[in-house]
Length: 152
Image 1 (cartoon, one colour):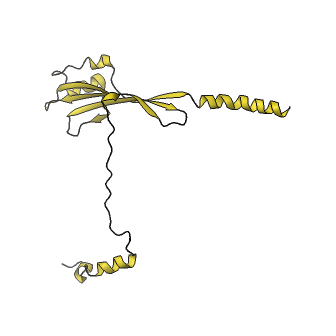
Image 2: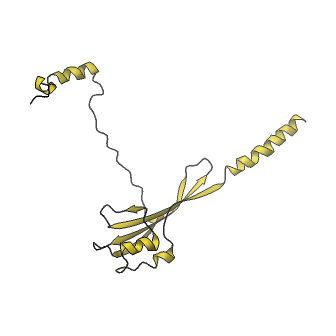
Image 3: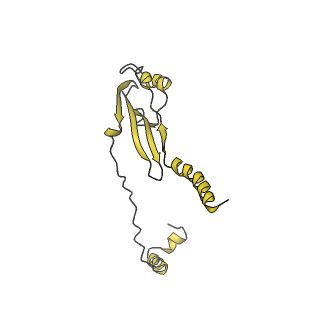
C-alpha cells in the first residue's frame, strides 16, 4: 500500500469524526407543563392540592410557604467546542392566595430574563501578612488563667 493511500484512508476515517464534532446537539432541561394542562388551572378555583395532581410539583417554590410555584424549562444548544448557549427558556409562575387557591398564572420567556450577577462576599481575616509567631504573641494578652482552666 502506498503512502498516499494510507493518508487517504486516514483522512476518510478522521473527516467524518471531525464533521460529527461540529453538529448541533440540543438538550432540554427542567419541566414546564404543556399548555393543555395549564388551561385546566382556574384562577380563584384551583387549589394547591389539585394543582399537584393536575400538572405536577414545581422545580422551585417561592421563599414564603405556598406563595408561588415556578416551573422552569430551557433548551440549550451545544455546538462543537463553543460554550453551550441557551436558546429557549419558559418559566410558568403560579401564585396562590394565603388560603392556597391559585391567584395568578404568568408565563415568561427568555426575552423576559436578565443576567443577575451574584455577589460573593468573603470575610477578610486580616492576617495574611502576619506570621504564626506574631499571631500567638498577640493572643497572650487576651487570655486569662481562669479561661484556660475553665473557671469563671
